[in-house]
Length: 424
Image (cartoon, rainbow, N blue to C red; front, side):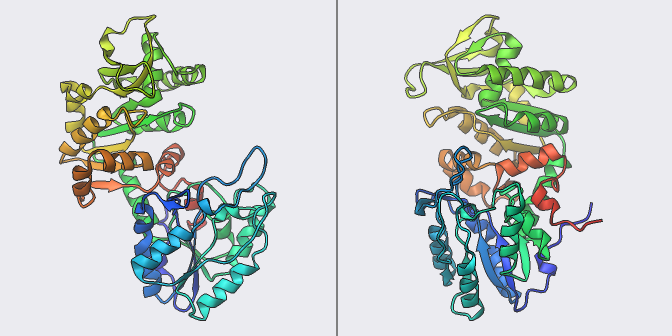
């Protein structure tokens, strides 16, 4: 496999550099967590160091309604808070092109982009930040509109840099644009891929932990991950559906689709089923909204035909169980894309698991997914603060990107990454 071309090897002096970031951190007009922005700052600074003029872009939210075909252009999904954050953090002056669009097609007139880039070239501003890429006609298109937008974006710049590891879908600004400009990976992209390689070529044993609210989004990654891992720990609906199928029980909220997919998963990975770690205690509740009425059930006591209400967490004592502790403490690599509890009322299982993982000082600990990292920070702030500076920890900026790469069988498997690779 060829190495990913690095923008550090490109001549950027005096050139405009179109950079795709994954700054999807704005909700209702406010930044939820600047982690993804901070992770891309080194790339931005190196562009300045190499004499380049940066044009930044990202998507925010999901403004395109697939049912109606309407693109909603709303300040709540705008990039203004991101620009303000970068300006204040780096003492720079940014500009956002003044684009307008309509709900039927989104932004179609790219002329304001050129005007803003000219101001950048004239040194009136330090960087240009394009409006939300998903506001533009063609960004998520599957037809020639994607290439049309990509050509328009490419016309603004001399070089393209993809530093958006978390934006793994093949859209105009992550994929099609590589057809029209010399293209490179940014520092964050290179760093994320290097750490993802530790999942594909781990120090063993590798213990993987995956949870989710729906089986359909995880069956592909799970089927691939169980073959890579020495042990696989499930949580959320994934574990609930597994328990329903294996022990012939019923759990409220686990639908027929999830049960069918759990059965398919267990059939498909039958030779590897011994790698699944059964967490021995679960928490049942009568309600999602009320944490007052809950009970602990031992998995070994479940009988065929048992009917449970909502199972909303893994009981903390599961992670004090000697067999489970042994799985984690013997691991040399731990990959986590999981929150054990369903709601803010059920967090004890997640806290217990993260604390156990932190005690595994010898292991490489790789955390992926926004919810996973956010819960770690919120539930165990002291441990998280130390982990952020611990070389045995790595926090990926994109959970979906990791799972997509795992399904593809390579850290270079995501389409936007493949598009950067030298063609044979």
